[in-house]
Structure formats: structure tokens, C-alpha cells
View 1: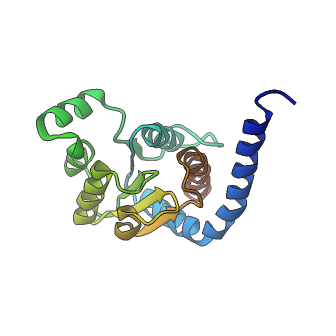
View 2 (view 1 turned 90 degrees about the vertical axis):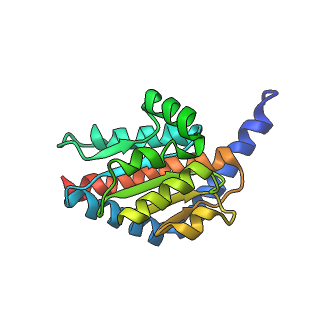
Length: 190
């Protein structure tokens, strides 16, 4: 045992317990997968957004679709709204940070698209505004949050509320669920 063993083992045990509880979300994960598959099969786009670690996850998941996940196949339309630093800083400066995702979406989102929003709190104002824009355009909304009640859980067509209140554990489950969604899409669309 090292001086770090207690922290390491506690984190592993928490992660394992959360993954077991995550099994209960299987029907909602399948519904989210169906929305993504329908969009991609129709030639539509899946947009991703989030802040901080969720921004990194949004970028990661978009790349799994546009590049490849497990198979060499044609690119799928996955776009992260978190990656254009010029757009983020210009919109943030000119309109406010609450508009950084919604303003980008207004120019491109259409009926049949999907917005997948990641927010550990489920209450990020810029993510909520993006959902409003996507809804108004007729796009489907998938949210990924933690277990606490949130605005995303009220606004999204499917909200995947992973079973933890702790940000690191939530983010670990978000990337797992995101990878499952990418695998479902890749299997169905290619």
C-alpha cells in the first residue's frame, strides 16, 4: 500500500459502483442512439456543446463521428461548437458568453439535426440557450448531466442523467455513454 492507495481505491470503487447504476439508463441511451442514427441516416448533423471538461468531451465525440470510432468508414456529420476559438471569443465579446453556442447554431441548425449537450450541472446558461435554438429549428435535443434535477432534464427530448453528483465521476460516465452512442451510430449508419 502506498500513501495514495486510499484515494486511488476509493475512486475506483466509486467508478465501479456508478457504472453498475448506469445500466438502468440503457433504455434512454438507446433512445438517444436512435435519434442520432435517424439524423445521420437522413444526411443531417449531430452538434455537440459543453463547457470545460464537457467542451473537451464534445470535441472528442464529434471527432469520433467525423473521423472514425472503431471502423474505417465514411465520415459522419459530427460537429463540435466548442472548437472555433475565433467564434467563441468574438461571440463572447460581442454578445456575451451565454450566446457562444446558440449564435453558432442559429446559422446552421435545421430540422432533423441533433444537438447533444453535455453539462455536469445541467444548468449552464450557454448550453440552455443552445437547446432553445435547436428546439426552435426542429432539431432533437439530447442532454447529458449528473443525477441532480436540472434545466437540461426539463428541456431535452432525452436526458441521460448519470448516477453521480460528483463532477469527475459524471464526466467519466459521460465519455462512456458518448462512446456507446458513437458505436451505435457507426454500426447502424455504415
